[in-house]
Image 1 (cartoon, rainbow, N blue to C red):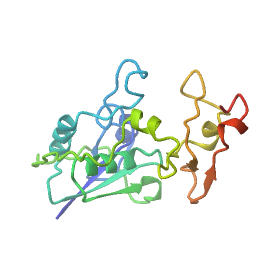
Image 2: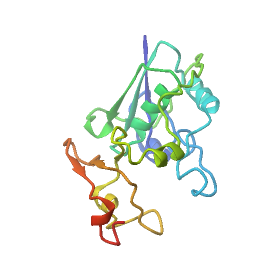
Image 3: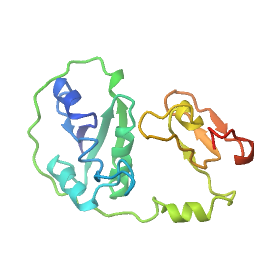
Length: 194
């Protein structure tokens, strides 16, 4: 088994210094398939599985490669981990690069292309229509992993209007605790939170 470090930070951060041997997967262009209009597919739609598979192959990821995806707590390493698994590659994990204390490099590694064949799973995604149809279903648990302030609708740094997703639970991703908060029923929310 071989190991491939995959830096999932923005390109400028990677170029400023990365772990020796780490390849780069750009969050906006490799791990996402952006559209010109976020209302059509969201801000970071899933990339084409075959284009992503080609990027993984070019990065030297083959069937026996363990991939350690790195970021600085932004969630892009987790996205890379999920995308690898979505394409049938389970040998992967994540690492918060802020915990690393060794030397960094600005050299890009030369890697040999590997044979990565996407085997797209069909049991790990859900369509918006199914979510809407199942909102009253108590067996459906939705997690909103945005910062607490965004979840409550207090601030919205990215969109013109704060939006509340009808999640019954919220996981706080910006802290290391596993605290769960319950969302108030719609009838008990203020107009700003609705």
